[in-house]
Length: 201
Ligand SMILES: Nc1nc2c(c(=O)[nH]1)N[C@H]1C(S)=C(S)[C@@H](COP(=O)(O)O)O[C@H]1N2
Ligand SMILES: [Mo]
Image (cartoon, rainbow, N blue to C red; front, side, top):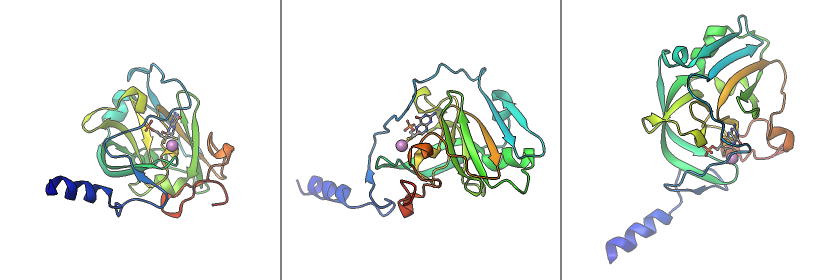
């Protein structure tokens, strides 16, 4: 049938939102975890911002959920080469948390750390400007445990390994302190549009 063939042809066309070296995972959402999914309830979950800040602070689930929310609608890109289009996460902008702790002007980098011990590192500027979230929902439903629920970091303009699942906190530093994958040769920033997969890219 012509209609079917035309449709299949169109779906094979390269999506203009696809960064170099990536493929469209379609409806799939692969789970990539270095650790076993933790048994972490919202009541147990906390989120802390510490390091080079005027006032370190920890939020409980209820406190974090009471902050003004915002939504990310767009794409995500894993360094293993899948991208997923048109995802919708709900959460709180990192700007809200960072403004509350008043970062020291000397802070240039951040380490995100999970309740499981996973870490990722990135420039502080990438957590600013409405481009990073603590995400609680996906498609309007609670974030599934295997995808980082009850809450994960979301920095969708960088490769997805930066977006630590089961997020516990962000530490601000005046230098780059490589996280789990960065210690294993992955890039300090990880911009998919520049294919910053490995250190040196
Ligand atoms: N705590 C934790 N966060 C993590 C990871 C992980 O192994 N542990 N993997 C990272 C990688 S490599 C990717 S691609 C995404 C995968 O998220 P997903 O499993 O929801 O697709 O989470 C990132 N955050
Ligand atoms: Mo990944």
